[in-house]
Image (cartoon, rainbow, N blue to C red; front, top):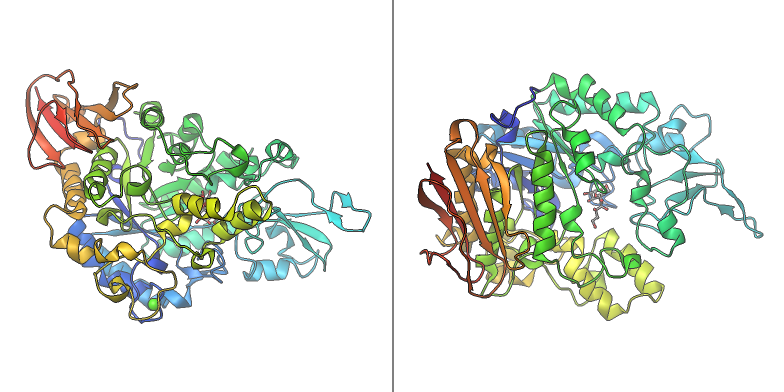
Amino acid sequence: MTAPSHRETAWWQEPVVYQIYPRSFKDSNGDGIGDLPGITEKIPYLARLGVDLIWLSPIYKSPNHDNGYDISDYRAIMPEFGTMDDFDTLLAAAHQAGIKIMMDLVVNHTSDEHEWFIQAKSSKDNPYRDYYIWKDPAGYTERGEPIPPTNWIAAFSPSTWEWEPTTEQFYLHMFSVKQPDLNWENPTVRQEVYDLMRFWLDKGVDGFRMDVINLISKDPAYPDDPAVAAGSKTDSLGMVANGPRVHEFLQEMNREVLSKYPVITVGETPHVDTADGLLYTGFDRGELQTLFQFEHMGLDGNPNPALGKWNDTRFKLVDLKDTLSRWQNDLSGKAWNALYWNNHDQPRAVSRFGNDSPEYRVLSAKMLGTVLHCLQGTPYIYQGEELGMTNVYFENIEDYKDIEIHDAYRKLVGSGLVSHEDMLRYISQSGRDNARTPIQWKAEAHAGFTGGKPWLKLNPRYTEINAEEALADPGSVFYHYQQLIALRRQHPIMVNGTYELLDPKDEQVYAYYRHGTGASEQETLLVIANFTDSTLERTYQEPAGEHTLLTSNYPDDTQNTLRPYEAKVYLYQA
Ligand code: TEU
Ligand code: CA
């Protein structure tokens, strides 16, 4: 991969990516579960939107304990989603439409139903034993119960250590008990991963999103988690983030596999700052092209750290501008951002960062699209974001299906830290199922997602919010996203322009410049976004030259008067 300077761009910096969570996208056979033929059916819809690349959340064989993020066979398609022929058909249809396919590489852990783990747990001298991380107990209680090697809390269960009675050792699982961590210290494991990557790349796949890829190297000392000792109830992922050999492993992966194919790569990396970002994605690092950082996902964090993301506090715009600006400035000219508001793990953007009321949902969803797509980096659209889909509120905890929601409910309500009513409110604000309710295609039964009973209840707002309605409305969020994607193709400054934040302390408006470089050196973008339902007066230093209004979520331009959630972009040409 050539290291582009900020004056020119590499091909992999141009695409706009659309993330599909297949289980909830489109069901073609009436079993209530989205599938690959359903995605193939919707390729024309995605081509009309104008996206260049689809990121498919995992489609491999899985017991679906964590909806595919627990893989039992990396070279087989999950039967609920279809067959390998269905995948080949989807890949061909996407490529025919000029759309690339990025797979989700989940190799920090496998399912406990993977053959490797079934072998590994059967005996200490099984050749697959060291594919995973096994430890003796730290000791035994008076009742003879084995004590886990560390105090770590798992993301989806109480402890990261599960006792295996046959061989009398614990195995490590940073997520659920059914997701044992792979042992990346073992070179045979790394070669297995590289082989499975080649299997998909040789089929013509165009890249990988790499699930929690910065957790693969563990500190051999396995120290206790001080946050847990201080009372935190949230996961100990930070204890295995950015470990001692992580860059060595990624450089080996790049040398042995990625550098040999024209791929797009993005790492999912919780607990990174911009210094880490430069190490993982620096143009000259030979590791990854971009990464999903999580800093702006934690801005509505908890006054009570013990509760982690479970709360009903709201972000502050000044914090959001500071975070996004830091990532823009620190990576500029040296590395590349992945830009996102939401994904299958995060609540819906318009509910979290905008205003999902009937009056302001469309305006604020368009505003958010404008702010994100005019930043420097690769924009990601999460399925339904282009429709302005919103968070959901289920009255009954049983209506939620996500293991993270049920684990958190057990931990926080079970321990008496949070009331049932408060937890339902927190789940409605922060739970992952907000993003996983089936895509709303029509206003008819089950929103046109399925002819059967959907695996997860629909968001009842599908009667007003659905693709059929959006495609019939020239003023819909869909056509605004279509315009943003088209503008990116028409104006190189949207890709290669440098970033400058205006008025950092403004708590209501996010305004920034993009300064053209290379061929667009004489150009400047001025992006202005009102994040409130108030009408405000703002004036900004005008760049040199004539200007045109490239896009707005209002039909006219009232100059310095910003109407509720007004977002507009001027192009200045000196
Ligand atoms: O998520 C990694 C991760 O950090 C999660 O803990 C996520 O941030 C959290 O759920 C947000 O509240 C990846 C996948 O995206 C997620 O779907 C999987 O459950 C997880 O890894 C394990 O594979
Ligand atoms: Ca189906």
